[in-house]
Length: 374
Image (cartoon, rainbow, N blue to C red; front, side, top):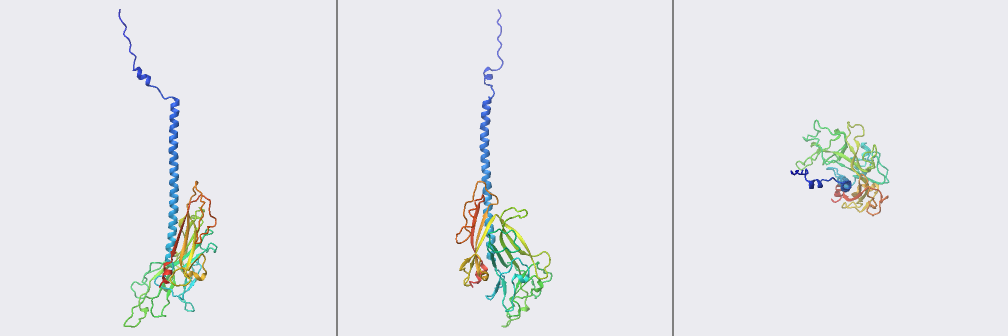
């Protein structure tokens, strides 16, 4: 009898047994675990980005504060630089309107009827309670201002060939300049000329003594001229003011050359420049050398008498900077003191979401104090 051959099953039964899909429960568990991991990573990324943003805001605020302080310090140190001219002790010091570009208002007169020289004070302050000059706009209430006056540190040589006349083709910018006379034969010339018309710069340099006698300085070359520099530093309520962005900013109003030729009695234009954003407050104390000896301040005053501005030889500067944007997780509950007495600034603590930093410095007005040490 013949035996029927058995048919072998196709494939490997063990292999078929292990080939099974993922159950719905396993799939949901895997998705849940994945979502938790993604959420955790997203949270870490968000916190990291927020922390980085805060660090950047803080770094910008610190940099702006340091920059604002350095600008003010630099100008105070240069205040009262009159080139080669040394004002005599008999000088009558003026406190003119810093927003006037009229020549007679600025305060320079070589000699009045009493033969006294008139000059504007190098440093002139406005306290928070003083009226705001007309060329200053959007001044923040409760802040101080300071006016700095000097000459440019660069002299223009108008008589290179020393023939006693202005070089052919030489023209000055449309601004005020000062020329000093070194004439040794008094009173042949005024001690200085302050003007915008270069035709009026006719003062001479010193001519050496010849054969033991003093020669007329009018036989020598003309002296150089230096541009007049006047700057007003103040705190504005805005950086961009139309529309108002609400960012307190250190700004400067500067007397600059005008675009057209000067004529009549005035010259120059006033330009406002934003220097540093986020500067919330500026307070100033002026060191007054009332004795006139040594250039060292005897007292510090927030609002010196008009007669004492010429005796200011140092300035204590208090600058308060803040972030440009608020930090949602921060409250400024600090009390700030912007004076030597240590009294709290009005309105502090602010209890807002802006981070702030206070900078202080005592700045010596080198030109003003140095002359008193001689």
